[in-house]
Image 1 (tube, rainbow, N blue to C red):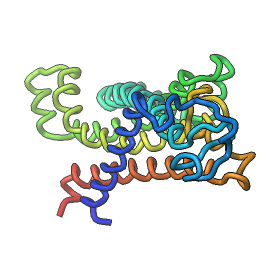
Image 2 (cartoon, rainbow, N blue to C red; image 1 turned 135 degrees about the vertical axis):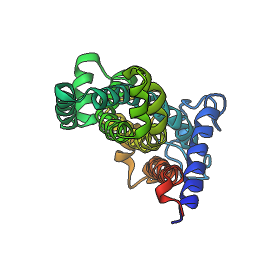
Image 3 (cartoon, rainbow, N blue to C red; image 1 turned 180 degrees about the vertical axis):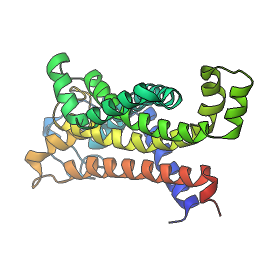
Length: 270
């Protein structure tokens, strides 16, 4: 697939996801989206609503739209927190080197050994289930990713002649990091954040599937998948709708990340 096509498709999917999430705050096909209608339970698509109803008679399309907001409300803050902490630590390690750099890398390796789901389970046992433990767990998982990416990119920038010139005129390490390092690695960080956002949506769905993420009655794509298990043969649309939403969101954000990488990296331009 051509780079500009990846960027266009990924951007369209990401924009659609954002629009659906924001629209769901003020409008869904069924208002309120949590309305229970037992006589209409387990209706197939078009029999009651565009995507049918679930085992409580709730409109699946409305739940799907509000689930987009639930996913983004956890994934976006988690990636933002992980990026801010990880970039600060990674750039500092690249500039100081020595023992601090070694300790940071070893800690990052330890954190990598604990997946986001396992971290969320431990935090859920300590703090209780809900969006906050899920956000913290996914953020912790993102920190070492941004530490390694920002450290590697910062080391390349710090080896440039203009950084040596800035040091020669007496500029401080903090000033060099803020004015020389960060602007030159910002494109790479944006690409990495886009890719991590797709992974965070997938992680949030997994946590909600386990009952650790979004609490009922607020809908979540992962919880919709969990609730559909009992009715797979009777109402397969209950699993298909959130499954397709998760797959398209992750695929779109990954395409957007790949397209941004090709657009921002001059070595990949023709």
